[in-house]
Length: 334
Image (cartoon, rainbow, N blue to C red; front, top):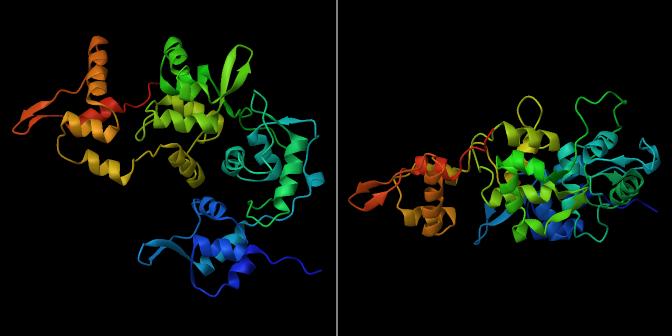
């Protein structure tokens, strides 16, 4: 029996030169949600504006080329190195399979709701290698793009210590610059407590790719600008930043998904370049109440920290936008 056509071959057979997400789904057999997820890849072709509703459309030939480059070859689990009983981190999985660290780090969250979920980690964030090999073999035998598997590199001394994929309260202290008692209070917040995956000894732990976006969303990490040595070191340990040099495009893409962009979004840069703002405008932009702003300023004053001071204008009291933003979103403490 002839082999099933690849995704690229199915797209080559499509009649239209410009395809929507629904068109790509119909042509390839992938679900629309899968196509949208794939479209977040930094190398995915740029969209075209077309139609009355400015529907996102993509050039068929470019999408077919992306599929051709990224659809996985079949993985023979028996050819991958290591014993089935080995406990491995996501970084070690990437090393053994030849896949990018950033791609592997997203697998647990990407396939969390899949009928064939990525194997479960233990409390230390390690996985059973035999389960991972079997899962990779099943995934790569299907039609979806899974990333190209390359032969693993010869064994060598690791350049860094193995990377864990869990956050502990001690790591949260380093990330946020807060003390032990403050972090104890922080992790009791319901939205954070419910994400905990258990304990290692007396230490509660969280999945890094689940908790980090929430810490950014809640404002405990800066949305842009310098991170500081503490959070930078933690992100290096987790594999989201390089130990030396600049982040890769893939690392930058993951951090942007988490809520961080070193240079800030275009919208935020425009906001900072704007005129002085009233407390009402600031509260609306940062998604808080005027009372919350007043309380934070009061707490900072009590602690002897510098605070922004409004200027009297014809329109009432106004804060310098850049000064207030530096107060509201300070770089994490070293």
